[in-house]
Amino acid sequence: MTALVPERRIVIRGVFKWSGLALGLVMLVAWGISVRWRIFGVLTNGLFVLGDGAISFDWTPQTGNTGWVIQSANGSYGLEWPTLMDTGAGLFLSLPFWIPVAITGLISVFLWLTERRTIVATHCGNCCYDLCTNVSGVCPECGTPISVEQKRAIVRAMNT
Ligand SMILES: [Zn+2]
Figure 1 (cartoon, rainbow, N blue to C red):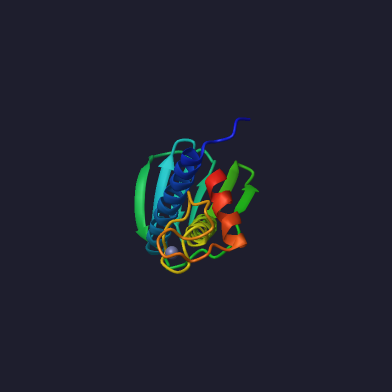
Figure 2 (cartoon, helix red, strand yellow):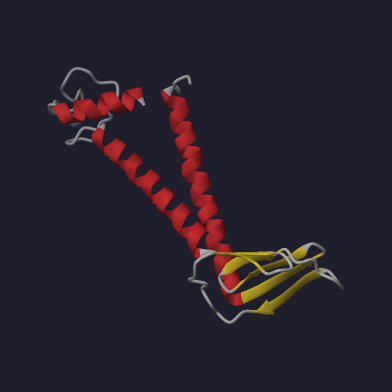
């Protein structure tokens, strides 16, 4: 495996950060919709339901009319574990929205927090000047000495 150049890593990190946040927001909106409404998709090969705080699919072939139906839901947030079971006629899978929202939320928080730490560590503690290309040991802007710990963080940031 070849090492990624720094710019590329930052770009990939940014893509993950923003797409994670966007996916989390989409899930949050879908969760909100599912608390208020139940959207049924009656399909020939199964029944899709977005409602009661979860998204589910029942692989039981549907007979009769296919189409989409919207009802009002009972306001459940679906704070349950996912379900996967064999109904006899087919598989039933239910994924409550809190799980993808929590996962994308945690990943986003982790990426934002670790990024902020890198920015703080590679900037002068006195004047916030970016020390990323600095090897002299003092801040060129205000003359504050750069600590060994901070120097290590700067080297790390330059190499990642
Ligand atoms: Zn400074």
